Image 1 (cartoon, rainbow, N blue to C red):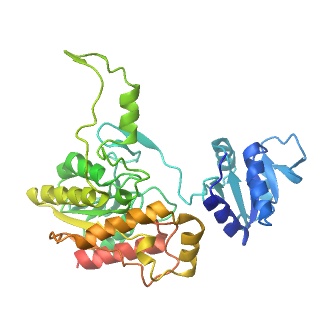
Image 2 (image 1 turned 90 degrees about the vertical axis):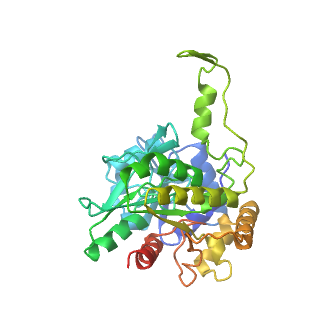
Image 3 (image 1 turned 60 degrees about the horizontal axis):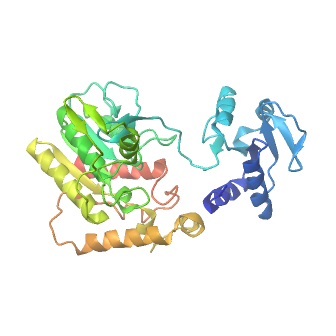
Length: 376
């Protein structure tokens, strides 16, 4: 099984301040242990539910309960299967804070539901499917925020910028609630669909769309059919489509017209259509071009250089980024409704988690700038 160097780098970085403990006595755990050993990093021990061996890879094997004897702030537990997560959570340990998956994400595990038009949507507890409410929940004025994982309200164990914006509005004693409809992995076409279907009927006063990076990232977008998600494709491929449906006989399926748009033009066209729809319904539309670590290549801090050099700088991704911003800078069309936030973190360090996601400090900077620019 392949281990990406980003995983090994992150574990090595964590090992400076924490003891590394591996879950499971299996082939995958052994592979991690051996790779870490090559770097001089020794896992303290392995854990199993009911240990049948005293040692594995010449390291002790302990039970889950023995973890409670540890100073939880000084250990990092790495799991390779979700069954371990259930056992650890039963002991009161928390994902991300106390243990992480082998993907070593700092994000929380999320649940999604299939969505007829968007492919998938977040499962959120609330009256409005796919949205999370912040600020004054009883206020009549409504502000809607849209975006992808950099705006997702459930992705990280700290506050997203929409929540911080809601707090800022409350602090100034203004009556407004903020509905965050951002979903990890969604691109601008999905935001456009969500705006038409879900946002316009809510009659918000403002729509703030914080977008850009997901359209640049060709790892997750279908350049030919950007309006069709991978989940919709799977459903179509698995459906019994050569059959009678009501009064019509269906054979095969269609994704629509093959798109020839570049990532930049796809993003720009989606934003233009969102703005046009909002203007038609007297909604203020605020389109924001979001920053990513590549925007800071001329002023990277030490930690950011580590991100770039060790695991995030892929040649193809950098090429996609450069092409997107080349077209953006050469575009003479008037995009006066787009606000460029790409330099917002230039004077800051210890902001980025990876190539585009930021810690709460970064989210607070975003929220403060949005408030000062559009609410004063």
